[in-house]
Length: 164
Image (cartoon, rainbow, N blue to C red; front, side):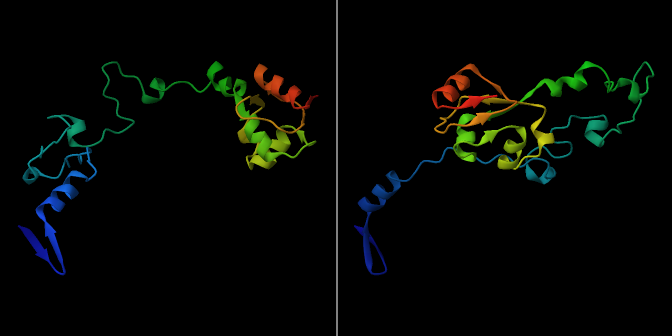
């Protein structure tokens, strides 16, 4: 016995085949919370706990409810000291694959030319640029004022590049 739908006659076997060949979905939608008491999930405070500022609303940043009265400005970390200069010692990382894409054979590679080719300002690149060996360098390039990983140095010299 089968089903008649329009000009086609579909048998029960065909329907079972279609159902068995469907892609299985394993993701379930998340429950919608915080949609009132009638939603059947939570209601009133939904995930915030019973009492306190967290359940009622937000606490002001300047709220001074500590036992030992210290101003909130005293509790923030100071903006002086060693940690401010940490970023200056970090490198901007660039790979040989990127340099191979950006530069033609015989060109010089330095911070200014990299910022121009990569369309990144020199300020965002930082003071030091380090070249890593990810990718392949197929052209002979001249490098100035950059730092290199050991494997990048080996690849540059094997491709006929110069380091000034």
